[in-house]
Image 1 (cartoon, helix red, strand yellow):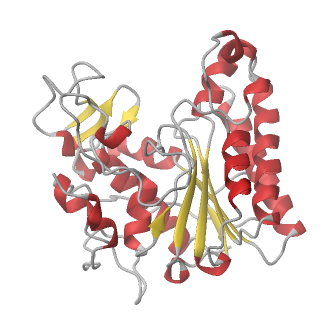
Image 2: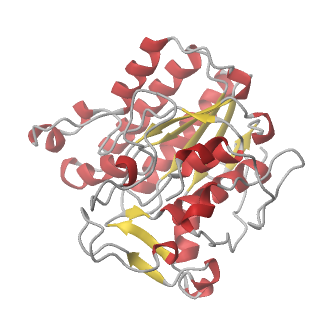
Image 3: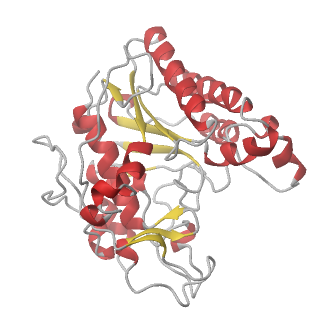
Length: 325
């Protein structure tokens, strides 16, 4: 198994198919997982002047990101350490337990790949099961378990007084998967309040010095998720006007998932997928796992394989490189 030291290994030339700028190339972190998926379509770009949410980037230049990538989010981003420590636990299996280094995947997550590609450290605050704000969701509270939130993650971050160079540090925010789950019981309208929480926490990050902020949208467009993403986008537009010197981007994962699952891509075949289900037979164990996780979209139920995470990073990087607003 490839060790985590590859996060700081020398970068190699890219053959991924997305636009690459002279001083920025795709890293080699995925090599240990035999990832060969390709971004088989060009993400559609828009501008923040659009009234409807679109992929848009106002000022984030990946060539300038070289200090740190700082992820906030849930299990699609988490690395089994939510204190911002570097390096996070290496993405290796312990016995038959299916979570590589505590990740809900068989290897690195999408922000780890972005960090590798930009030769940056990754300082994670994301944690599995997180919502934007636990107080919004009665169903979550009733479970009486320790559910994390963006508000908690921000508190930890702010308590540390980090000194990363703002100009060369990228902050990523990806919430909504668990909020959406609870909204199906507690009400889709609460998702709009969740979007407001994201805005408020983003304001706190800006006040603490953040200058490059990427917000990602849910990978589906089910009932309620569209208005939630629209609210996220509208809030970003407002923040952009309020803080014109801050670089802000929005990237919606739905077009990627839609393209993978479409007949036009032969249901993922043009991306390199052979299976659009999960690799594991039992989510908690690698016993009985498939022989080709690199061509399965999911590792365990509802959680991407590391090669899908690599593809997610390709998608995000393409949006940031081509969707200048």
